[in-house]
Image 1: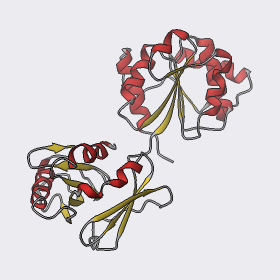
Image 2 (image 1 turned 180 degrees about the vertical axis):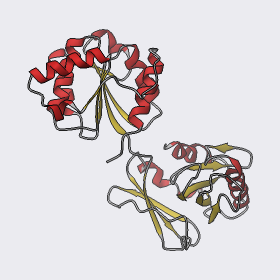
Image 3 (image 1 turned 45 degrees about the horizontal axis):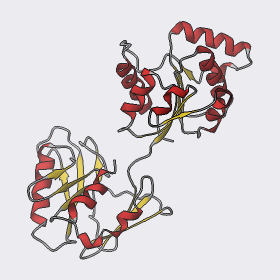
Image 4 (image 1 turned 30 degrees about the vertical axis):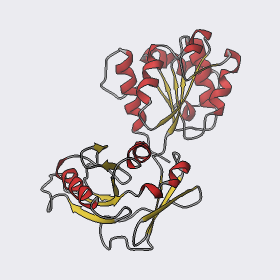
Length: 306
C-alpha cells in the first residue's frame, strides 16, 4: 500500500527511475487511483495491473528517462478502444522522471496522512500535511495543467481489527492480516503468548476494557480458548456503542446458547442482531486455521468504509 515510498528511497536515489501513478480510473480497470509502479532501465517495482496497459506504461516510463529529472506527462488510456483490453474501463496515468533531489517530503510520508502533488511546468512538487481534503482527478476531460493539484491519502484506510485470542486461529488471522488493510490490536490473557510478537497479554479482569476501547470503525473478533471468556467479551461488545463488526467463532449451537444467555442478561434483540456467529464467508466449510482465517478476513474486507 505504501511500498512505493520505499522504492523511491531505495532505488530512485541510485539509478534513473520513472514513477508511474494511476491518478484516476473509471469503469472496469485493473487497478485504482493511487496504484504506483517504479520503472528503471532494466527493472520494475510493483504493477499497475499488467497486460497492454502496463506494457505501454513501461514504454512511456523508459522514454521519459531520456528527459531531465522532474519531467512529467499525463497519458490517458481507454482500455478497450486503445489497448483492446476486455475490461473496457479508462485509466489516466502520471509518468514522471524522478528527481532524487526533490524527495525530501518522503520523511513526512506516513500512512493516512495527506500527500499534496502540485503540477509545475518542470516537476511535480509534493508536500505532506494533515489538513488538505482529498481531491481526486477525473479520468476524462482536461488533463492536469501547471498549477493544478491532487490531494490523496497515503496508503489506504486500515480498519482497526481487535482480535481476542492468540491460539492457532488467532495466529492465522494475524498472519494473513499483515498484508491487508487492517490495523491489528491483538489480546490474550495467557502469559504463554507473551513471546508472540504483537500479542498484548492482558489480565482477565481487565480484558473487557479492551473491548470498550475499540474505536467505532473497528472489527472485533472473539475467539479465545474459553467459552466463558468469549461470553464476557461478547456481552461487553454488545453493550458498548455500535462498531463496524462483532464476530464470535463457534458453531450454530454456541450461537444459540449465547443468544439465549444474552437475552436473559438484558441484551435486547437489536443489539443481539449485531453479533455475527459463526464467522467467515458462507460456503467455506474447512476447519483448518488458515482456511478459517482467510474466510473471516474476506468477510471483513466486505465491510463498507464509513
